[in-house]
Length: 305
Ligand SMILES: Cc1cc2nc3c(=O)[nH]c(=O)nc-3n(C[C@H](O)[C@H](O)[C@H](O)COP(=O)(O)OP(=O)(O)OC[C@H]3O[C@@H](n4cnc5c(N)ncnc54)[C@H](O)[C@@H]3O)c2cc1C
Image 1 (cartoon, rainbow, N blue to C red):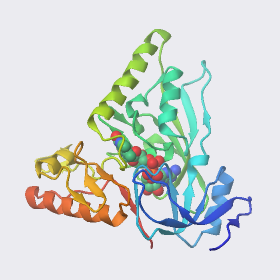
Image 2 (cartoon, protein in one colour):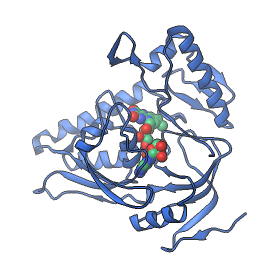
Image 3 (cartoon, helix red, strand yellow):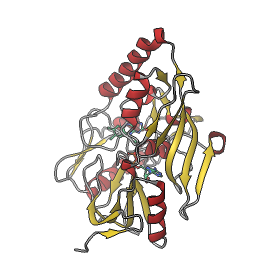
Image 4 (tube, helix red, strand yellow):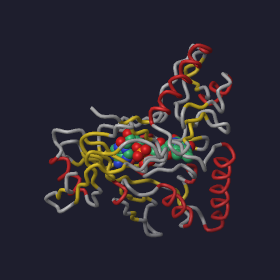
């Protein structure tokens, strides 16, 4: 096995490193680094200028192929600094991309800052949540984004204001960039209203726990909710379409369509990425045969090449 390498800024690059994901399946990264500064990210981009570079957040929306991935995986979770505004300042929070979203939400609510409590229960880093425009029944991260700070593949630092970001359902258009930080505009809540904000957080969490298999290994919803062919302004529930096809509980190898929520695929010990791919391809085929609708994956699939 190759020994670890060092970059100019003395960052260790691991070879044949495991890639932590919520599915808990998949192969390794040929190279993986955990930068702590923008300068280190730049340094790595230069070193891997002619190879694929993939950004890892919390791995909550990722399926990694059994053969692993080539090039570099940039694990940004050590870039997690959060600057909270003073009580008298505008309620804008600047956080690095690797900041843990659930912790950010809890701390915002503790400080009486509202806006992101609608995303409670979504595992993510801030960068991953922005790229995916994570959200659900109560709101989405784009409702609170003010500015995104990101590097291009050649190391240029961009500061992008919200009007220039084309957010839509589970889409940001920022996937070609490496998000390093973001400013979130929150809403300061009067002292007397803070218990109501804390209750709201609990309510959103309870909704998630009651409707989704939160304790199982999964990547959340596997498919995007498709647009309704009868009314393209609306979306249909992918989970309901799968459920209506009688596919809840269907298993292939170590992968199962969750009996709790049909849009979740959950994995058992020993599951392979290929089990998930095979299961979800058969789910997609059955849904198309029955409804004429072709489901599109929300989960990001990493493979070599
Ligand atoms: C139990 C469970 C429940 C979930 N519920 C929801 C839900 O209710 N709503 C919802 O929207 N999602 C949900 N998800 C999916 C997941 O939480 C979101 O998609 C989340 O935004 C993923 O963030 P992440 O940091 O884990 O990104 P990752 O999974 O690590 O990466 C996802 C994609 O974002 C890219 N990326 C990550 N960070 C950066 C960055 N800094 N710069 C550029 N690209 C980056 C990656 O390269 C990859 O393409 C759920 C997942 C689980 C496991």
